[in-house]
Length: 240
Length: 96
Image 1: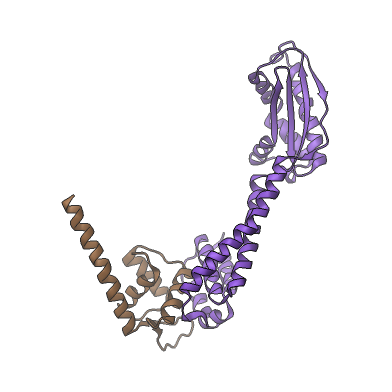
Image 2: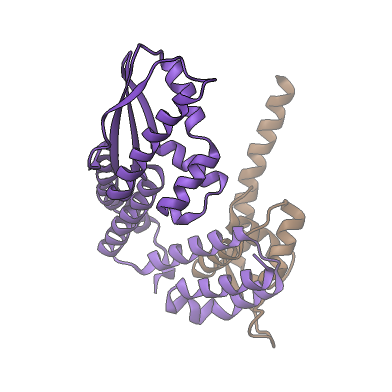
């Protein structure tokens, strides 16, 4: 971020301080920001300082409630980032003969090249249509190829939207079947689709996401109680 | 020594300074850059405890501060305590 933009952000952060504090120190802090070189570290520093000053005048209940809401927001964001695939659709493929997990993996690698995944991303408008390396990696994390028996494999795809999860899952098994036709990879054993991609359901990821998100509220409230008790002990005469 | 309030007191022990001058001075003698939020958090606490106070200045936006007698006393106590820790630590290192 350019220095001028950074300073603008920092000046905006001053508004997070309580009114009594801004009346007394607001102009001085603004002058300090003008004089000093500012970095992204200062954003967090000012935010933390503003919260510290806000909490000096907040009641016990207000601190607890704000921490509870903050906990819910943080857990919601974290669970969305780390458990991003609540819907999963699964298809099952059957091989004419037995195959080792390594064979299935080799076939998956041949079928799910970066180019192939880019095509699917564009075609299905996944992840805002931008098939960068990060997005392709993200898609790979959503794909599961799990042998269910020596001659059976479950291919599934997890995504935010159940309809697209199903369509992509169907596309993925088609690509495995196609890769198996490649004479370099084919062991001469046919692969058939025995169970087409099922209707995507909220799988364990979805439940984990909900559970993790809802955990944020009680954890935040508990943190708020502890914080409020600490602040009550430390609260100085500056509260007025 | 990384307590911001102590660093601010140590800086003002040399003479009156406004926020930016304190920030520069602390960086010079302690090698620590206090962020603006941390610095003004410390100034708020110190002023509330009566350990520093504002000095009349023509520039309202660059308000200088002065350490008070109570502030000097507190700083002396804290530094004496730190000094004891440093001396003990150094002598034990020599013995080891």
